[in-house]
Length: 198
Image (tube, rainbow, N blue to C red; front, side):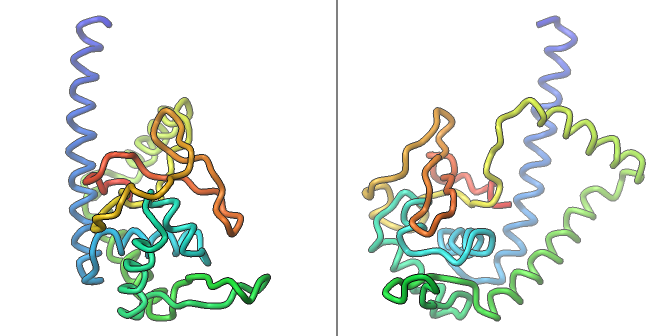
């Protein structure tokens, strides 16, 4: 790599990291209102984008056991953000979906988070923002799809990782399907990095 390209790549990497930290700080601030454990927030977010789902689905995507996933889900149900419903195709099965309270909370989170991002982008003109989006798309066009709807796995459960997880790709993402027919993708195998929540 030519020296000039190397220096520019280093600058981009540092800038991207700083922006990622700023973006995550905004997410944390918004999610603080839920007063839930990060693993429970992850459940909420997954159900919001993929629900209704089963406990087995959640255990698979979190890389944990069904009993551990049930404990986490129970806490979110008690908080009023999720509710259990019968599977319309099989009444013996129970699925998890957002409650009215959960949907309202997520709508507020989305509004607050967009306001935070708008503040971060405020130094840019509309034209500059359009150029930034175009450059971003050009870069991402060569990158394999990465799941963007899941916070990091294995938060808050001593049993995390003991269950059998879905097969993963070399990048650490599951390519299996859930028991309710949804295509599941696990987050990175490393714990503690929650920046992929959105």
